[in-house]
Image 1 (cartoon, rainbow, N blue to C red):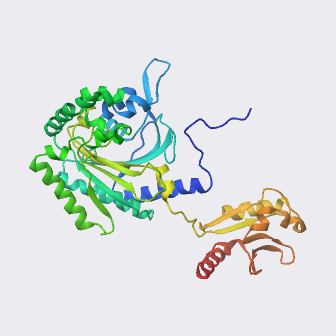
Image 2 (image 1 turned 180 degrees about the horizontal axis):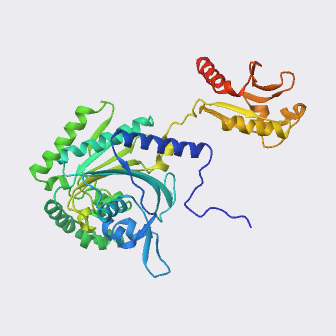
Length: 420
């Protein structure tokens, strides 16, 4: 029987795997630059953690959570996002505050697979818990921009909004309830439940957001205090002062994000190309004030962002690194093991050194596809009684001794780069 992948997952190999590794390495480099520390959390947690953190009526909990019971009848779930697990770890292990952490790994959501969206997907993100003034939250957006710059991703705009204090949101939520009562016959079933507990979730629903009466709903900005509006203005001024003029920043007064834990600042990076279809958000985040306390930790606010690797894969311009690609072959077992030892002693890293995995006669070597297509070959030249490195394009042959292989390869890479 031939097995196939489950629906909504994918395999990573060759170019796709190299893109994954590039995005991961650039993310790690950027986070280390800003003094964030890597944190690894379990792939599954208790179901209640995600329900408490993201909201009982969020799409994740209602439609997308992978839940199961273990053999001891404990209710568990595969992690659908990273924030809840990181904050659980902070609370449980009493990690020091301020906390600057970042994560990267697989997440799981049962949703309809489409371009840039899978049921198992990679997500990277940061969490910064601090008592610093909220205007410093602008740094998180600057860090996200720096990360995307490291990948040469620039064709996007940044949308931000301010959700205000608890009292301001409650006042707005009550107004939304009154408004949507006029359209209960047009709301989806899940939205009827949201109408009672958190009407803001209706604004973030993918289906509801397409309806005209939702587009024309009252906006939160009209219910914010002068203080909240000033905080949003402070962040806008910081961003506009410190950002490249080519980066578009705008206020989206409908933006609320998909999780109940967000308060005050929320933001999304929207791809402006046509490569992602309907899935335009490449990175998003915001701040939260009470989440750590709600799951048993200190009363410390936080801010962060997350990105889905699969969407970045679609828009990244990937060029393979300028490595020397060398194929080596042996005509005897002794030559084969000499090549193995030669490769094991190699210090020079900018090289792909592949050894053909079977013994080949010289006269039949070029029938081998890898040898035939190689730019550089290493083989044992009997006339010289030593291994040689041959440039198959220029036909130049370089004698190799174990002690000078690294130096020879460095010179070849330099010559190749100069030619390009």
